Image (cartoon, rainbow, N blue to C red):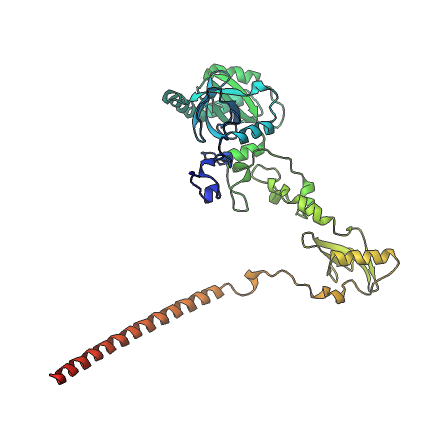
Length: 396
């Protein structure tokens, strides 16, 4: 194939299918961009705008569109300016995923943006920040319990979308009249949640990575404390809450794996009986399949850790009326279980300095040895030259 292939940003896929715009949460990878006749299967095109807004349009004029092209699309009213991010088969699949209610929701692409279109677009975008500041002041003056988080102008400047956050229902009919009178544009109010606002603002999480909501998450799902309980996380709001003041989205990432692993563990209310006495559940390492028991119901006494299989063996034996000799099964080597080792605490961290000094010293000795060898070779060369001169004199 004639297309250039890249790694890194494109992760080894066709460079033609990789597009990155200014908003990282809208990065799109069309892995079918280099497939022959990909765009001949459908005229649907995905176009993306500011933040996470995107739409699907018919390329009814048969334009030769490529990823990254700036196009003028049908608006309500007028036209809007956006960037082509997907064409062909994948765009048709995205339309199905979007679950559009009617064919009327899919508008048309007018043309590739002209210079005059881009000039109007730049003028409209330059007004967004000042419009947001003034609209906040107007909402405060009207006594509305809401926060306007962002403003997006349509490409032709005839319409503005105001994104707001509110805890309850807000009657903003008067606000719309005032905004339309002040800014002379058509007004559309769109409510967003705290998670969407955090994604628009951006930032870094405690993991050291950029926020998921500002990079790749587009559809937010509810996060409950039940997911934290399944993972034995401390129910501390300061640790579990993200920058949006709600539970972190990443709590949902591994909860299914924890639920599946917890099914192999014994019930926490079950008391294990051995000839040594009764043992009560203390804690569990869900993913490792290890369970710790205490000989006291309320205190951590004589903590013994066994595998989930061993605990189930004792429970089955108790149900048959049998009491094993001890909780840990020595025949299976349960008392010699290896615990995870923290490499950072094995030795003093200054050992790295000693290793570095040793390497420097070894390198210095090697350099001195090379210099000494070089001097010896040089002396030998001089001695050989002197002997050659003496031999030539003797021959004369």
